[in-house]
Length: 83
Image 1 (cartoon, rainbow, N blue to C red):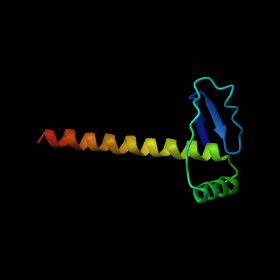
Image 2: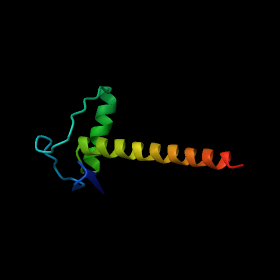
Image 3: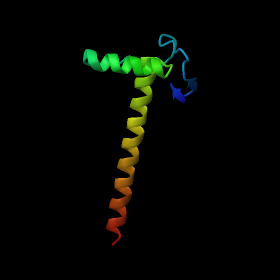
C-alpha cells in the first residue's frame, strides 16, 4: 500500500517518515481509550506499518469518501433542479 504524504513524497508500507524534516506537516494529538489504542497498535504491527501511517491513511480515506459523497449529492441536486 502506498500513500502520498505532504503532496510530493510517496510513502510505501513500512517506510519511516521524519516529521521534523517535512515542511507543511502538522502534529495531531488524539485521545483514545487504552483498548482502542491497543487494538490499533496491534493492527498496525500486523500490517507492518506505523500507527501514525495507519491513522493518516484512514483519515485520508475517510475524507476522500466524504468528498465523493458530497459531490454525488451535489450532482443529484443539480440533476433534480433541471426537471
